[in-house]
Amino acid sequence: MSAPRRALPSVALLHYTAPPVLGGVEQVVGRHARLLAAEGFDVRLIAGRAQAPGGGVRLQRVPLADSRHRRVMAVTQQLEDGRAGPAFDALSAQLEEALGRALRGVDVCLAHNVLSLHKNLALTAALHGLAASHPALRIVAWCHDLAWTNPQYRPALHRGRPWNLLTTPIPGATYVAVSRERQRQIAQALGLPLAQIEVIPNGVDPAAVLHLTPAGRWLADTLRLFDQQIVLLLPARITRRKRIEYAVHVVAELVRRELAVRLLVTGPPGPHNPRNVEYLAELRTLRHALGVDEQVAFCRDLPGPDGHGLVPSDRVMADLYALSDALLLPSLEEGFGLPLLEAAVFRTPVFATSLGPFREIGGDAIQMFGIDDTPAACARQIVHGLMDDPAYRLRRRILGAYRWDVVMRDRILPLLLQRVPAPRR
Image (cartoon, rainbow, N blue to C red):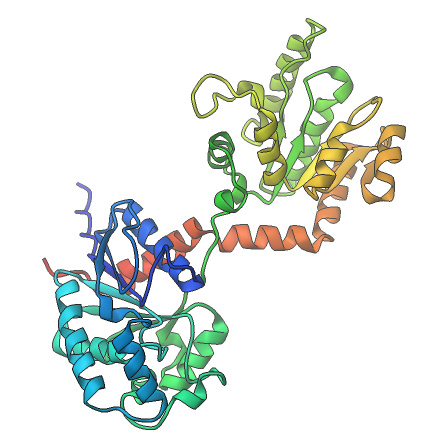
């Protein structure tokens, strides 16, 4: 019998504002909310200014949480002058009451910047008060920015309460830094051991940044292109002069080096020679014999997102260039070399047979191999060429560790399911 599935905690995300308000933290808060909802959490977004983000996320507006609310701004001006009077106390009490209502039924509150910035110190005080009066509520202080370590903010900060709340850790709270530098600063400011502060970076959605079409997203997901170490593109119809079998052997050599690799062959069999269909069958047989069925993908064989067979349009071809690390052109003969022009626009490195038209177009800006070079030699050239390219190394570093789905799977979910105690039901 399988173990009963652990109940997911109810999660609230708290910030001064949230999308569509523009800002880096706002963007992260919105992304966290949607990702957690997609994982099955009961998610609510608490902010002073925001719109319902959809995707199963509920919005609860607390107008006084907004750092730009007129009452908050008036109190903030008093605090910058070093005065924490009755107006601050009244605002803090009202915020604590409103926040208590908004957090009713919540197990975990992810407070973004609220406990480390001075943009609404009454909200900081309110959350400290709630944490003391509601010990079952788990607080996660997500620290993007710190007021006390920023020289720009130091003139607005003074000794004593409420400014010292920014350097007073909440007992039992979990602190999260977005970088190791922030982790070090939080530890120093709050007097906490580094081990007590999680490091969870922000992320990126590459499909959104690249504006992929539905077909491009489907390809990226189905072939796990973001998880590979090398994605090679061979944009050609399946004809013998393209020497696609050489590319299949190159992939086998890369796999032998224990590299995660994908080769995308975009075209269908050439329309003018009926024997091209036989050539595709030979390539499938070779792919299987070399054990690279998963690594070599013929777009002609893929069903596509609608299940009707994938014939890449010009727009989907743009997706493929954006998704690829390099162009591989092992042709036996060419009259021109149109893919080189397209690859140049996308800044995609090119590895091509040393043919006259390719040399004419690319000059010394592309990497060439001889017709008689072995696939093993070509594979070495690709590996060395890419590893010498800082842009490639940065791309693969970011795709491997900073994608939102990776950050959620490897960092955020373990935080909520392991470090934060199970909710009481």
